[in-house]
Picture 1 (spheres, helix red, strand yellow):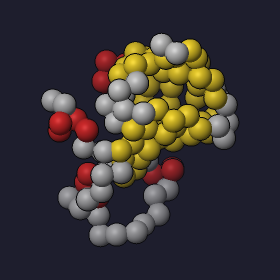
Picture 2: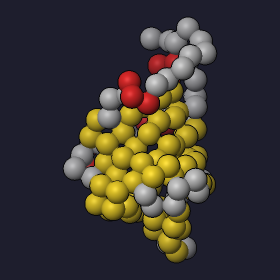
Picture 3: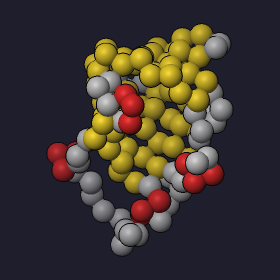
Amino acid sequence: MTSSGARRIGFGDLKFTPRFAYGEQAEVVEVTGTGDGTVLGTGFARFREAEIPWTVQYDEVILVLEGSVTIRTPDGDIDAGPRDSIWLPKGTDLTYIADNALVFYAIHPANWSEDNP
């Protein structure tokens, strides 16, 4: 279903859901994506006692809103706190690490999983 256009998305109206195999460590909620007819995916993620390995399949920007996040990469750790941003280019091998954090993310393209079943 495609969105009809510009709209306000209230944080209190969002429903976080566990993230796959790491549900006890991360919950996410999409704000925009392919259902809106856009290739820009955005949303929020909550991390709790998280250590989640991943290879980024898209370009990603993370904005830390609460707490702190460490992104462990082969080139070293990237630490970020409130109002700090992290840039992660497609193909980055990493581990998301956080004790308790809320982040906003933007990814491109939102339909990355269609190309990577």
